[in-house]
Image 1 (cartoon, rainbow, N blue to C red):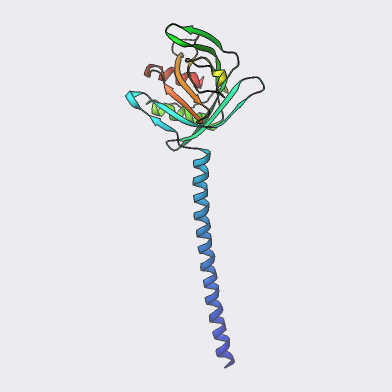
Image 2 (cartoon, rainbow, N blue to C red):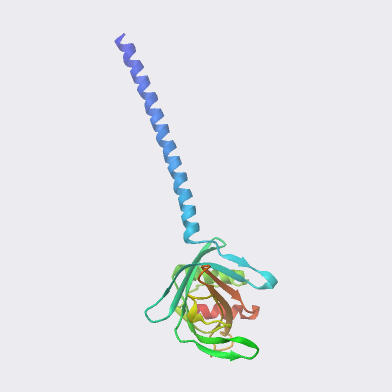
Length: 216
């Protein structure tokens, strides 16, 4: 009787151990799923999808602004991060203070001329240049991005110094006084109220010079 009872208890305990082990494995599985779901939603929040438009042969990119602020220098900085076709990309635009209005015949509002920097935010900016090159049908090897790339800018019938009040469509001129192989133009439109920055192609002929400018 004692031996039978002892063997029964051993068998029962083994079943409990197997059940507990199974329950533990199941909980680990559920926890893994929850962590994966959290990671996906967290990534989508921190790096929202970059919308790619390729109408009429032009490559236009729409980013969600992740951060924007006025710097102590008086400049205004706008930072974007996103997921561009599976690549985590990003960069910053710093609009310098002092914008000079110039009247344009036939247009009621003046165009405002000033300066800006395309700023490197780390590995995300390198990934952006590589991704942009891919969309342009080009390749870059050993890419390194300067900390900042200077550009002359014109606000198209809007004042970039008033970004906090109203959106602004701008044209950036990279290497305006440089060699032809480095000179390029691109449209950058910023709407803070919609948290949107558009990086729109001006002309297909500027693709190679633009990539060279950002990689100089």
